[in-house]
Image (cartoon, rainbow, N blue to C red; front, side):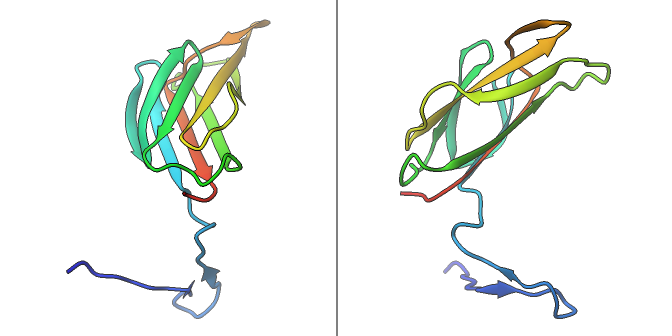
Length: 129
């Protein structure tokens, strides 16, 4: 039989800094992938990542969200130490309960466009269905 741990509050060993645990406080999905090769390094509650086009990725949940009112955190980067390219992120389509689409826009030397990066990290907070 699997073990079950039911906890409302975690407290540091010295009795300070309580942390209240709620279903809202944990990420409901996250992914770490290489956008240049579409290789998922690791993930939670993500069934797939699809390279829709250059700079546009679609993330599909394993378990659907309760509604499309969830929040996404998203950051990208290049592994090149001398990279001077700046990137910004935006949603490529409206959120749904089963997928979200991301665009990665770069600015380099006065040029802008959609592009893929080696480090692509995203997390989702909200309610599962």
